Image 1: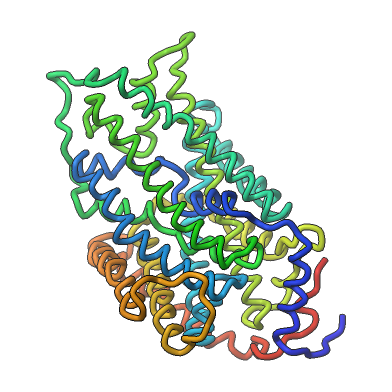
Image 2: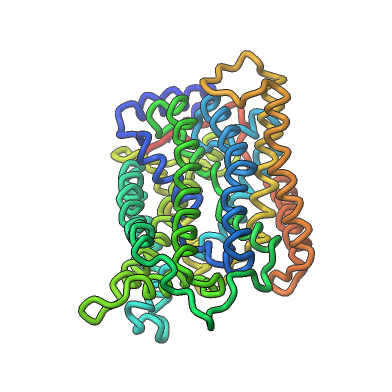
Length: 471
């Protein structure tokens, strides 16, 4: 393979020409993929109502889209339309703040993925065991988790459009049982109000705990940005997709809880993950001896976990690809398939790492996830402001309203919510260590990795021709 050096913009021109010939992600498949990167449906929200009660819980779910999701979506919409590059938020931060902070942005995201990506195959098995208890015996659950990793790896290797269409179908299928919950409400008004029922108030999780759980459920809006060069007309598609996804995610969270509230089912019923299946059993009753709505909700839980893992493989695998193209990682990670344009080396390496984490038994490390994600998100908000100042002439199909003050204010409420998470993390224990200290160590280790690998990296301004090799 030739090692002739060429200008850094040469690979991007070749890659852009190749991508014009390939199938790209359109608006609604992108909305569906974003939905899974952020939410995956109503699952995982049970503790919000259990901890804060119906009134406070529903207010939290309505409050966060306005003060957290919309500012984030506006920021992503502007940066995606201005810089529709593979690697998304990594490319934005690197351009606005330089190589060092660009590397830290990618490091924080990939480090968080180690904890985050082990969750979804585990959730898949959690719901699967409710249908087939056999998977709860021995190592059967681990094998089912490996199936999720392998299946999602194959779908991603088949190309971005396959992942997008799969996400769209999974969205419709997993939303069906919750649509049934909402539709059945008029037939069940007050049906479960009884003198012995527990009061519909919060429990030990508390209001702040409910906010943090909701914050975790509304995280991940920027994950869709990493596939920008594989999206059709990204300058127009991203802003529209972000707003549509915010509305969609908010509705899938709020409407089922409002519906269940009117049936009289107490908030204490939402005790833990999987409680929606219990609610489904109460509302749907039995048909031919089967609690049909419970079964559909459990099946939807499996689809949710599968869809989230599938969409996030697509997102995270583009980080090593983008970094390799710019000399920040070995060029082998820049290899793509000629047929599908999928970064096959990055996909396989990332999926293998996540598969190794399946047996570690990670729980939902919410405060740690929020902390790592929050630091990376703040770097993106800073980048938004810096690029407004340094590159005012940069073409932006969409802008955060309010000029420069609006761009600055967009990050204020997300910052305040993240500071709440930091305060909470100081009282949490993660793997036997103070949660805040553990998060600081992971974040700080990115500085060390950058310093120790500096001599190994190819200079960013010139890239070997081998970096654009396809297989």
